[in-house]
Length: 499
Ligand code: NAD
Image (spheres, rainbow, N blue to C red):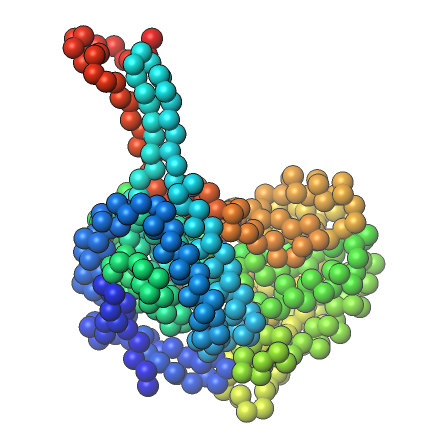
């Protein structure tokens, strides 16, 4: 059995707390490794090392810091297959999807190569008599991030690449479910030229998270995961005076108008609902068909596509549409919610309950489920299921459909499928959700835009990646300077007016 490590000060370091978590191969159900769970002393050691290393890194000019990012991109491409295989083995997603996970992170690293431009300050010549005023963006110091299991490459990179490009040190506390890829990324960053101690990986659970939240040296905390934990981290981190951004759960609605291209809508739903076994924060989990006739036409196309989905291990290559879910507990939770759907009166039109895969009986596979006649009081509608379960709601009108998405507590992503520009425009303007697709089911913004939901899907002010990340990982200092004559003119006792 492999014993994983932390990555501290450029070295793989064994855990000393005596506590470990099992890391599974979700396809076989076997424990393939154990990951150490750090205690507060181990976290404090990493913070001390980060705090020592960071000032010198902040002095490295932004162009040279960007060159590390450039080299890192090259190494990610060199090791793409290795990274994807390690990712699939612990997460369960298919290899092409695992590569997508790495690539969506890599794109943010590419954006960070623009650090010299993005970190430029502002300057006002002659803001007053003989006075110049300028502002600069300075790094925060030691920063930290806590990431979820579902994108073990992408989300760590969304955090550490801008943090480090801005001149900070970064401590990553990855998900204990799939920690191998984050460890590999830290090694690659050093191979790319990053000094030791600037990117460290400290594995753990709540104990390590609390050590981050209550550490006085750590200046900022980024979190991505479920909403209850996001709320806890946001509240606790802010109360400790830290800068915090937390991204939580989702229940993404796709609205299908009567004039939509039904083939396109059905294809979009099958990919966005079941890809990665529904374990994406931008997965579509609710299809809202406007009108009974639309629902019937949609389901006629959708049902055969859902029934034809191929579920299997990543090792089966391109023959698989999605893999297992991450743990036995996740599988049990999905099955429990499916049962509540049936009990509360929804119609299960594709029943994945008895799904079994020969040779993988102990894997955490869940067959595809499709519900019709879901209503807004049902648990399968109010709860984030995070599995291959799609709910169909029949709305009578467009207003009822948009109202459903607006009233839901989550507000991560949404989409509308229509041929009518006026409806699409109205939807995009009125909806209280952070990321909107028009005939695009998973509207994940690219690296140079920003990513973030609204309502209970996001706590904080600034989004992930794009220009917001460079704001989150720096603070502004504004300097007013006068040389040197005014200094001799005696004191001024009212607020300076620059006249
Ligand atoms: P999770 O909340 O269980 O875990 C996320 C992180 O928090 C992990 O590092 C974990 O170790 C830590 N953690 C878990 N319990 C904790 C506790 N009690 N106290 C402190 N820390 C704790 O989430 P997950 O299951 O890994 O990921 C799935 C969730 O993440 C889903 O809800 C999904 O929607 C959400 N997600 C959101 C986004 C987004 O951008 N909004 C992106 C990806 C995933």
